[in-house]
Structure formats: C-alpha cells, structure tokens
Image 1 (spheres, rainbow, N blue to C red):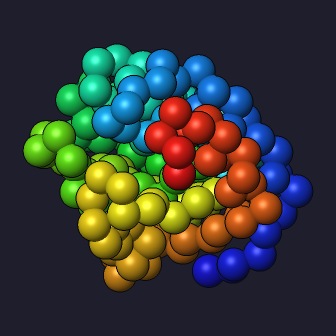
Image 2: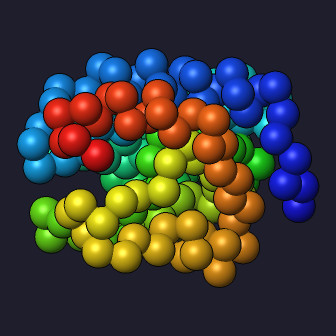
Length: 161
C-alpha cells in the first residue's frame, strides 16, 4: 500500500471541505464533509454531517449507495474495494449520541481500503477517538493532510475548537 499523497488527494479533500461547509451548525456536533472516490478517479458519492437527521458525513455518503449499508450489491461492493474516502475529520469509533454504527465500522464493513483525513478528532465530545488506529488495525491505509486542518476547523467555528 502506498502512503503517497497525490494531487488528486488535495483536490478531493477540497471538495470534502466544501461539503463540510454545507452542514447546519450544531453546538453538540462537528461539521464534517466526506467524498468517496473510485480507483478511476471519479466521484462515487459524497455527504455531510446532518444531511439526513443525525447522520455523520461518512455515513451519509455510504447511505446514498446502500441505504441499508449491507453493501451486498456486486457493483457497489466492487467499486468500494478500490475506493478512497476523504473526510475532513477522523472517522469516529464511538457515537456521542449513543447510536450504533461508528464511521470506522461502516468503512471497514464497506471494504474501503484507503482513508484520507484533514484533522484528527479532538476530545470535545468523545475522549480518545481511535479512528485512525482502528482503521489501520483493520488493514486500511490512512493518510493525514494536515495542510487542510485549518479549513476543516473553520467549518467548526461554532464549537471553538
């Protein structure tokens, strides 16, 4: 697995940042954007926090592909096996709301082999998020683009983080 950052990584993270700006601010939640991109460099799906109720960004992007998130469709499953998901925040390992299904679990279930993030989750709502570690332990390549952290934080100005 390569850990090389590409021009495409910067482009798609910019799109995820734009998606995060669409989130309605919530004093109890981060504003996050996510984009899933296929190995062919084409967008598969995108989403943002609170796009549908209390959904997280990664969850919203995946739900557009498979609302039940079983990923049993051969076409969907095959495209996700070589995809990259770009998220403006480290995928969660625990939901502060208590809802089941962390974003790291959903990514691992979907079989996405590569995750690119802008920012690791601060301890504001959930202490000790271990999304990066959990994904890596599951065989997922995780790349951080710290040059996008300030822009990712800007979408969360309502939280003073």
